[in-house]
Length: 92
Picture (cartoon, rainbow, N blue to C red):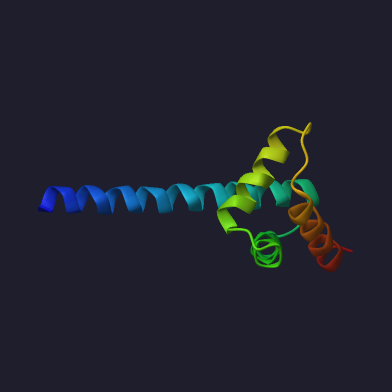
């Protein structure tokens, strides 16, 4: 593999990481707006849901965004239950 190929591979990997972080950040914002929680609480909910449901953080974030953008669908049961539980633990 030459230098250009290596740089292209690295750029692609970094862009993937950036877009994953963007998705996570947007999902965090959606939780904050919908539930009036802080950024720290929203981040904790996302990571906690990922851990407890055995789902990748990006997939949880994508699910949260999909539900936020289209109220006609609901998240998979494991993710929905984990979010509900997390919200009960942190919100008054």
